[in-house]
Image (tube, rainbow, N blue to C red):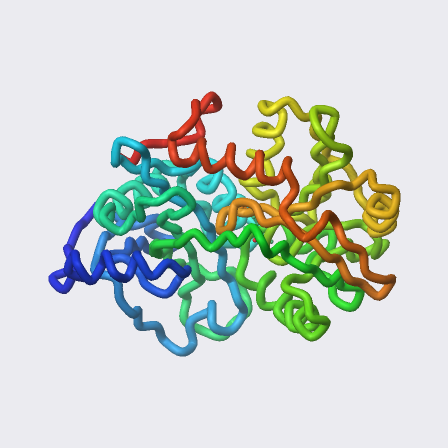
Amino acid sequence: MKISLNPNAVPAQKREALIAEGGFGKYYTDHMVVCDWSESEGWSEPELIPYGPITLDPATAVFHYGQEIFEGMKAYRQPDGSVALFRPEANARRFANSAKRLALPEMPEELFLETVHALVKQDIAWVPNQVGESLYIRPFMIATEVGLGVRPSNKAKYILIATPAGAYFDPSKPVSVWISTEYVRAAQGGTGEAKCGGNYAASLIAQKAAAAQGCDQVVWIDAKERKWVEEMGGMNLYFVKGTGSDARVVTPKLTGTLLPGITRDSILTAAQDLGYKTEEVMISVDDWRDGIASGEITEIFACGTAAVISPVGQAKSAMGTWVTGDGKPGAITMQIRNHMLAIQHGNTADTHLWMKPVK
Ligand SMILES: *Cc1c(COP(=O)(O)O)cnc(C)c1O
């Protein structure tokens, strides 16, 4: 890796103040990593350089046809002051899968991981210290061939940036959701399984529709039968059925149109470790409504890297409005959330070796 350090790095006192502000995605660390690919030369040696703007020709492919993918992952402060990444290999693998779907070059997983370790190591002072806080890491790749011809780009640029993330969990505020029947996120054969900007571009109008209904987030249902629950915004969903040690922790099955979340996957394991039965099944909007009416569904939560776990309260749809729980996060939701955070912050045994020390 070529390294050119930032001569204008943020002074320590200012950096501490910026981190203390909390929030998400407002400030970026002092450096970034860039790595170029071309069909003829393959991947170049990655470069760690000062964080800053990039210059691109206006005819660059990504601006016109949206050939772009990204990842989201986190580094957490450990009790001994060191820093560890949560399941970075899973992000490396998914990044390669997304690349394949978007006809971008698959970055070798070792190269991806090398860049992540290098950036976090260089900017380690930007990793916050409190439980629930973290350094959010955003790898992405854009098509950089210049020209308006529609074809898979023969050049690509990988960039890695990082931003401190505050603890923005408010347990007194479960998320309200609007179940969208007007718009769909993904269809079989589409890009729903890939983490690409295009999926988000197409989703924003539904997010607006949810807001117009007074809801925080949109819930997606399947494109074909328009009845199966898929995801919430950019997070996967979980339903808790029953209570206490007999409770079952249930999530919509991956059908090819859901984004396979690493948090979703980790919770399947973590919930079993806590003694719960887990299920990956098809869940319809009717099952959701009936489950709440009968009392079988006791808790609902969404999960993803950014918020880890967010309780879901009210669900609103063209078919009516149903409320889970009493407006407070459920006991099992909080138990799983605390367990995940304990693993991520090194406060409980990491039996599945999910945490990778930054070296
Ligand atoms: C990233 C993402 C998720 C959550 O994935 P994690 O790996 O858990 O962060 C869920 N749904 C969508 C649409 C996403 O883009």
